[in-house]
Length: 285
Image: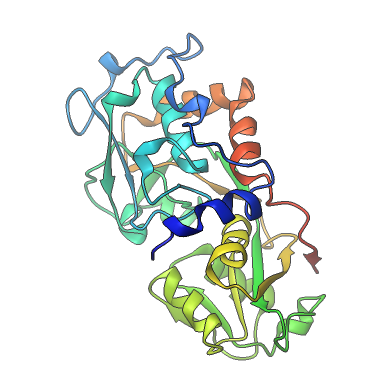
């Protein structure tokens, strides 16, 4: 999906606290004395380099310019901040392209950790290790402004909507468990396919996580709106976690890095910088 021409609009419309062109300050954070794990102690998939996986294209607001290595966008900034806590500078970080559903599939991994809006679930945790959560996320409904369901104010009003969602996501699970639509949702392999289905009015609504909903309405579908967000998905808060190979010796150190970033307020700063607009959407109950 070609997005470079949209960047200026995104900076204004998508994120309340406008992104800057310089990499996030946390991207090259120095190692912290708060964590005892150092790069010399770590077992890495590529010696001397911290290899981080994510999918391609890498969407905003999670990344910027489809370039995870630039340190811009929420997840790029988080990844570099974790790398800094582990003792790596920017030149010692390399990125690998990993399909979304491959990241948490069983088996050997080509990355030290993967960052790609992967929600921590019990089922996925049977195949991979997750870090402690670095972001708490809610799901949201997007519809065309003049569509039949654009004015919905409750989950009950969405029951008869034809809903599009990406396969293998917690959004898909939320559709089934929270909206419980009268007809099966239309399921797409790629998020962009679901977006195009809404754009072409093949579905009435789209369910994605809230920051992505802001991106869809700001950059991908001109006449779309956020109908609302789910107050919950029926269980514990949904969190994104960094994905590691099952049994990874890196996990304790990555957890310690996430804890250090949270205690210092760095995670909150990164969230405010890149996801500042992801508030204020009405809640559907």
